Length: 376
Image (cartoon, rainbow, N blue to C red; front, top):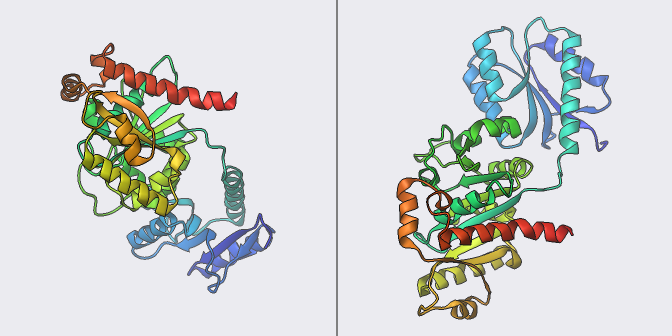
């Protein structure tokens, strides 16, 4: 099979329409028709609307979300505006009525080839956006505070960087830290993977006053449309082409979704405080990452939050315990931090001159400078 060939599967009860498609497809050298014994991924599936349209739409979404097919064309013996709208939302790229001419089918197939050629050309884009995952050694170590204020510092006007902030915890509260009222969450992403592109994502993200584009977590436990590893990979592929930095609030739970995020991350910030339970937990996480084979050791950075110089466990103790340098320290300032949380504002707005705020600005500047230094 030629490398540029497209696999087509036709499943139509309407024999006249079936013959029309087969005739035109046979004239296009780039197309190969699949039979029932060919179980490889289908680039284009042409199906017919069943007597129960909802069953057809569910099938379409399952096939597209599981990447079993690239695109779906839908044929129907009747044309109804509501059905057509639902078909579009379910992922149908082209819709054919009972009186469709061969010229219309040919044009639709030509559009398919153009879309696929463009997609294949962009299939391995040069990744520009840097994914920074912030993960806690345990609950209550300040992961959300760090993720929010790091994102805000990266998006500061003097840097002029495009920054996204994702809350990938269930029942996350990133939006409360930024006093925004988002209309959508990442659950909308998982429901509409076939529509996933930069334009769709822009319509979903909430823009905060700081300039950060926020994708919050659902406010309830979704029983359907969970964030699967495949959907996460698609999401980050699109976002890495849209933003300079993607900061992820990971919480402290390891599961299939968070493991996929760790796999696609450029940096992982492991957040701890100066106590032995945190050190023990990070040690176990390091061992888990070694067993998994990702993230790479050089991409894992230890962040000490609420850092106090004169404590029972100092930086040297942490280094000896974990066999790794401390990448950054966030000074302890409980009153300023809790005031920012209660006001729903980032530190840069309510306490721009405080030491804790300056620490986030310096960390952001370091992250911005490093890629530029590598380029030089």
